[in-house]
Image 1 (cartoon, one colour):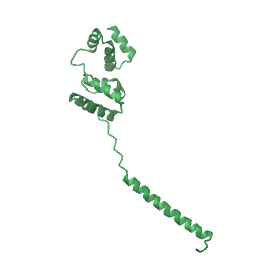
Image 2 (spheres, helix red, strand yellow):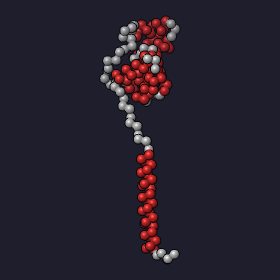
Image 3 (tube, rainbow, N blue to C red):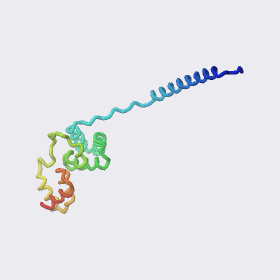
Image 4 (tube, helix red, strand yellow):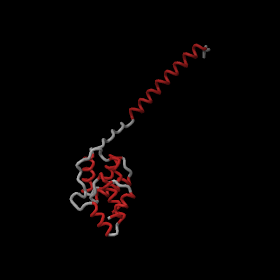
Length: 159
């Protein structure tokens, strides 16, 4: 093998570096091409659309799907989504549920109110209280008015 001087060694090192950069580039491009495309984020439906979606699924007995959809569109925890769907199943408005307060639409929408066709809130609270279900009455008041726990307890006690 012939003797290589410093200039020849420098040329060989540059050629090796160029080949290495090309190989790394090809490998990176191949990896990037094999990756699955990023899923598009699901847009949040309108408040009315989300309400119709969740209540429609609940009415048809598909509560698990309603929970999944609610979580997908709002990012709620499993517990909060289940409690919200259970409230909707009991006839309460989706937006009156405590977990939904941070998603409440800025403008009031024409959503049907759970108590609009039946007795008013005070009457329902009195009925629950008379049946010995004061804790559920407090939950009802909190869900429909947005009151804190202490204010709702005072409201129930006052009736």
